[in-house]
Amino acid sequence: MNKTLWGTDGKGNDICTYEIAGKGGMKVKVMDFGATVLEIHVPDKNGNDVDVALGYEKLEDYFTNDPYFGCCVVPSANRIGGAKFTLNGKEYSLDVNDGENNLHSGFDSICHKMWQVTDEKDDSITFVYDKKDMELKFPGNVHMEVTYSVSDDNELRIDYVANSDEDTIFNPTNHSYFNLGGHDSGNAMDQLVWINSKKFTETDPHSIPNGKLVEVAGTPMDFTTEKALAQDIEADFNQLNWAGGYDHNYALEGQEGEVRLAAYMRDVNTGIKMEVLTDLPGMQLYAGNYIPDGELIGKSGKAYVRRAGVAFESQYFPNAINIPEFSQPVLKAGVEKKTTTIYRFSAN
Ligand code: BGC
Image (tube, rainbow, N blue to C red):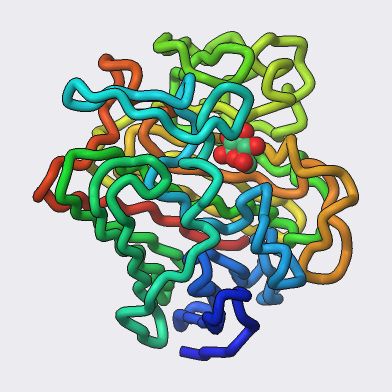
């Protein structure tokens, strides 16, 4: 465990970074501010170290972090339509921070809060955050834990645990953006993607699922056979036109509750492949369409281009809380909830 002071949050708290590593050459750097993933180093096909996660050079940029680089998004990832939901007969109004909707929980994001470290080892770290009742306008005092661990065979495993004193929403995701050619290697659209999904959640023009699951077959949304992201991302297809490219939730095959393969991405130049595994029902494929071209200064001091990285966000379906047919992202009072997502790396 390599702990380093990075700066302060301006409210009297020191912000530290922590490096965890496995014996297979993988190293991951995280920080306590937002329980954010900063760097993911993996060996390429020649054994060279490549940092495959997008991130900022300067700590101050994480105080806004509009793209949510590396964030641990809690309690509610993705969008809730109309920024409203009803639970146990009570209506809750959330922050309206994305058109008329709620995105990633709201304005005063827990991505910008200090998490406490409760366990540190060479290959893992646990952060804890205690959300207050109605903080971010979500009910319940919610105890949340996230553990990042690196295995000797180059997996980054993310375990979430949550407990609440009231029924509430718990739909966590990690918002890392990946570029398997290296975080600063330009746009990631030549990389090949496969997704274990035959259906996606159709959205309205503002990326809110309308409750319909649509077959990917015969559409540009189809990743059941691997293809470069670039191949169809500019296709003239409403769903893509509205979101500016891939920014959609895929209904994963296999059993919710069991950790199974959700997707992979691979880069032919570095030979790096990343497999995504999760026990959650869905995964948002977000191609970094809204990363402003040439404006955000990344870790090597160079500006990132549009679509410089791709997020694979495991989650309950967006807006599920308003669509009873979808699996519900509800954390019941007094019932502990656990969920796991793994990013597994190899190279050849
Ligand atoms: C959303 C995008 C959004 C991005 C940054 C993703 O999870 O799907 O639409 O732009 O987060 O907020």
